Structures are given as structure tokens and as C-alpha cells.
Length: 317
Image 1 (tube, rainbow, N blue to C red):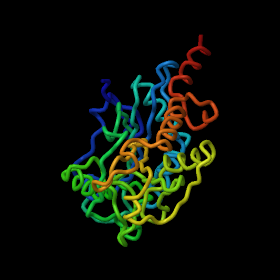
Image 2: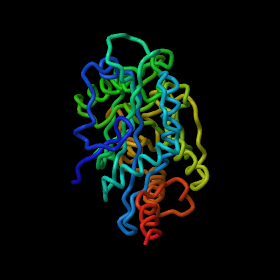
Image 3: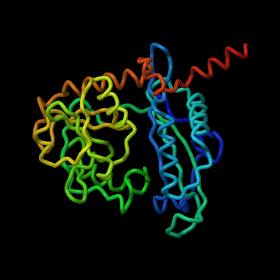
């Protein structure tokens, strides 16, 4: 497998071993940073790497920075250009995960967000499945609750807030499950440990609204659009009770990292047939077709990494 060789750090692309921060860095001590996860998918037939919804991810990063009072000096178009340059330098020919990080780079002891220096970095690494059993994950409801918007807002991808996800994930994996579902403070369904959640009931796709302390997922929004426009499935955003999970016809997680992972059981109760259901399968097939640049109708969703570089090379000859 290819290894990460470079990073964008302190305004330039440098060897990965040079992209280091001090142990005094504010973000390292207090979790005062935010990040994004962006997927790029390799199309072997076209020998092309496609970035999925790159602009949307950087737009969300700007919103996260705004919440944390981080001054991100790069506009969305510039961030996209930097990402393309970094990936071309890496030369990956496989599915890849891109991690942009904006953070408080000041080296001082002080718990605050204001009047601190900010930093920004990007690295990329080859990446496959997040959940190995993504065609039938065994899931449990965690005893840990999702932190509320009035404590740490889930709509911002804040580095420090992911200790909540880590507690949830470890709690459930140590109990023998593959992944967790987490409840809000008042006991309704929020999402997975680090994924959005959908269930199917009476042929309708149901998901918790953004007011249930969930991440405003880009993959979530994309799948809602595909379900409505391509599959003709009604999508409902409403509160979900825990017991509804046990009577769902299908259920699945979604997100940039997890992609689309079908759920086979919840709290030892079989979901549907215990295998990936027809709606989840159709959504997965369509999603990966789009992500790998094979569906021209949704070409605006993806950005080719190497095509632009090839065009420049041809123009120069």
C-alpha cells in the first residue's frame, strides 16, 4: 500500500516528517481545532482519482472555523486547488482519505478561543473500509449520550468533541459489537458514534433531524437527494424512538468515513432479514457509481484529480 509522503503545512507542501507541531500547541492541549474528512475514489478503467463533494466539505470547514473563532485564510477555491496539488504530488492510485485541519497553533497555556494564532494543514492517506462488516454490522446502543449543541455543537467537526465519539465507540466494541448508536440527552436517537443513521419503515427512509445533535452530514444530504430523485423513496426527518430501531425493515449508517454500512442487528435483535436490504443496496450501488465518476448525470459531485494535470501537460507540448 502507498504511504503518505507529503502534507500541506505552514503554507506549503512539505515532506510529511516536517509537518510537526509542538507539545505546547493550544489545539494539542485543549482540542481547539476542527477538521474535515474527504474521500477520493479510484476509477481503474479511467485511471482517475475522483474527489467526492470536495467543495461542500470545505464550505463546512469554513462554518466550523467560524464557530471556533478560527481565521482560515484560504477560500474554498484555494483549498480545492491545494488539495488537488497535494494529491497529484502523492500520486495515489487507490481510494484515499483527505484530512484538512484548522487549529489554534499558539503555544501557550490559556483556555480560550479568542486572540490566538491559527494554523492549517492537510494530509492524505490510502483508506478502505471504516467498518469491516459494512454489509451487515452488529450494532448496539451505547450507554454514553451524545453531547448537546449547547455544550459542544455537533454541527462543527471539533477535534476535542470526538472524545465523546471515542468513549461511545470503545464502550460498544468492548461489548462485542461492530458499531454504536447513541442517544440524545432526552433519550431519542441521535446518530452513530461518528456516522449519521437512517432506518426504513413502511418503505420510507427516516432519519433524525439536525436538531438532534447530529453532524449535518454531506453524505446524509446526498443520499436523501438520491433516494427522493432517483429511487422515488419518501424521506422523513423526525425524532426516532429507541424501540423503533427494533422494528425497522432496514437500517444503515452513512458518512464520508463509513460510506454506507448496512446494519444487520441492533441490541441483538435482527434488522429485517439480517442481511443488507434492497433499499440500502440500491443506494450503495448508486452512491459508489457516482463516487467513482461512472454516472455522468452526477459529474458535478466529483472532481478528477489527474485530468487537469494531464490537460496542462498536453497544452504545454
